[in-house]
Image (cartoon, rainbow, N blue to C red; front, side, top):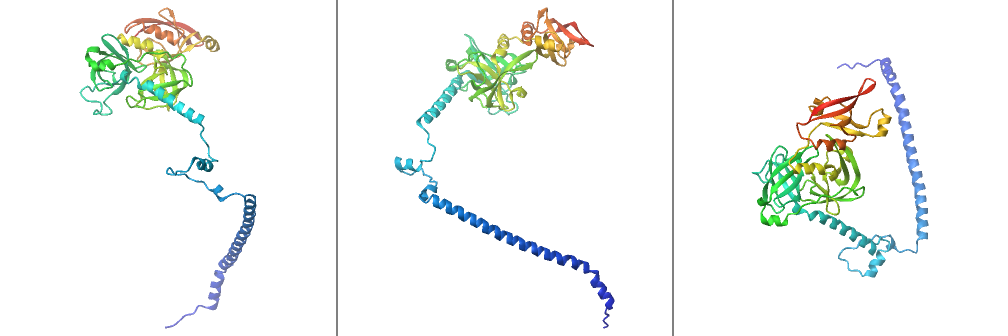
Length: 425
């Protein structure tokens, strides 16, 4: 076997070829070693400094507080089974916050007041009923969640022969008869007198002779009150199904009062509360006198807050309820608007009246030629300067009536008076 050796020149060339690597690696290794040594020295130096400072501080504290016992630095936990005397407890808890008798009295008083207010709501359980729409052959707890149509109801008027019940319109729309269940479990049929989905209310009627005698003896009615005097901070009581559970009671305070909200052909006053809103919640609102002052309505969360329960003022819907009790529906025009007062009219070169902000498609108003930005001045020859006035005029009409509405409309650079003939529905 013959071994061939590379020429000396070739071997020297190979060494020179990789010489630049050695020149780069070796200095780098030396540099890293120097850095590492520097870090060790720095750490040792800092440790010495820290130890010196800590020792000085400890010595200072020790000399200043050498008269204190070690028990001063111990936090003692007293177990329930401990039977120490009152004197020892006082000594061990000298640095703890003590609740005075006046504090306890205040807490007890607050708790007592809360229970007293809640008792007002609980006292109306025999005025409340469950309303089941369209499922009379199925008990409410066996019905499908989507189809059972359960809502609250409250007896608000009792006559010699009838009971009148106010309820949410959602479960009774599209039917003439529903089933109601009283607090004790008795079921009876109720006729639907009227529905106003615009404000979300319906009125039912129950014949007195269909209600068992024992139930009749217990039934109560909730009286209408007035929203006057209800302002920010006022205590209110929600009953019915405010959190989605029937016969529940919630307590809260008004956080924002008299919020104006536009609806079709009307304007309602809303009140926001600090109670948490529930998607399935509905019911009525009582004041601390036990009077009905509103109805839970969370359709206007852009005005009342996404997490706050809101209610419609009884003053805004009382005339509607009275109309529904008589089995009458409210004539429909189909607009939304805001009042234009003298200052606004002058500032924007308008006339006083109702500025139309929305005209519903396929509504009588749209079919009759009314358009957004019209200003309504008169209806049937009567001055109509506010939405409330318009509403009062419309409730005196019935479906099929033709009315004359005078509006001011901007045409090019001027406003012109136009009279529209509109058939209500």
